[in-house]
Image (tube, rainbow, N blue to C red):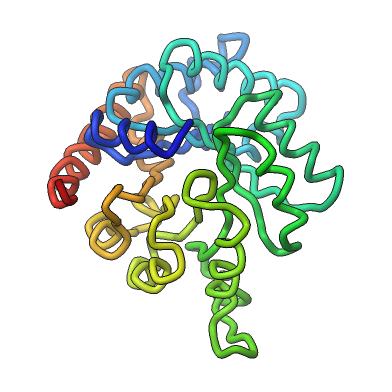
Length: 275
């Protein structure tokens, strides 16, 4: 998906919501276990109910690969279903891969060729040659971990380097020369909303993937205030707060209601973008 198409989807749906499909077989409604592929059925119902309110879905790969071949198959079924029934949705593989050489090439092939995701999250810790293979795919996106929302992010990301900048600033400054706003995004946690002004000094035009709104307590209004750019520039993810909002047989409609509420908040915020 191109930068232009992604922005147009935001304007059309009046939303910059991404729904994380962190679909845990231990948490889905028990009656779904009667199906051959219960996690896929859960995902299908969530997607059908929430698609009007979101521009993206983000399966967390750990919840699928932890279940072996069945989990991988249900991930494939999920991606194929969204592609067929909800074209135009941006699909993110939340895989956080990071390696070098032919290993990185295989990761890129897995998520961009075999599964046909639009984007994949990657760790930049091993440097440019660990990221470069992902740039070989046209109209695909690399989403680089920059400033994450977990407590342990302070262990390394906030360390001062010899140039007096923090490590996450060095990551932003260096990696911004590897790609461009058409193929590179950054993960910045919503719990660091006050840092978004600094992030925008390094990557003013790039999209930012923002986790941490919802169950983790991040503020949507603060994220928009400090992180927006003229093209919105934000994809805000909510996972558990939406997909597990309900536990009964109408869980999908409860999820839709929650997604609709967030989309409504986003629609009001988008009115503040330049015309």
